[in-house]
Figure 1 (tube, rainbow, N blue to C red):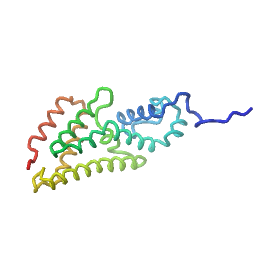
Figure 2: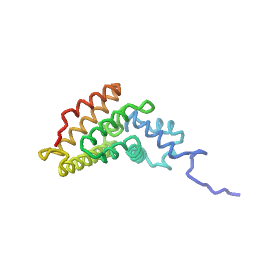
Figure 3: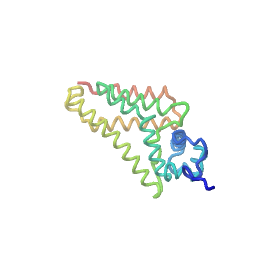
Figure 4: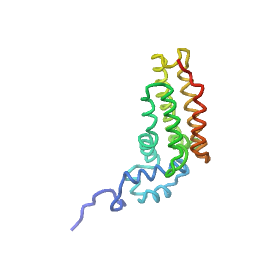
Length: 202
């Protein structure tokens, strides 16, 4: 009697897609897009290459799913920070969140969205463009929040929301790079505090 195949071929019993995606995120976070080989990914995920393709698609599609997970998980502090009642509160929360997330003890140091694909070959260009767009979206959200702060009188009327948002995001990305280089959490937080001492107040 022929048994009907259920699920993609190669998927092991007990396959947990959510757990596999979490492990893939850690691999990309540590090694970057091009540094994370398919063998490294499948080994960390505990599945075969066939299972990876069946569940997530190719490596690029897997990375896109990982970036969504990263945005909703480790990087979710940005969305929360934008809800702070003042522009200074927003900036403080963003830098504190950056310091905390880029120095967590159980995950790679640095930021997946910053270091995932700063330089790639032609085959990784779409992922590089994806991360450029990801960072640009974060900047745009902060700029819009600061524009609202100007409109509400929370920031001085002469404040350039775009320039202020660019300053903040550039500093946050610098924190991520420093964290990946081994600079400790306390020192990074001191840097963040210093960066906000001359914050424009209305």
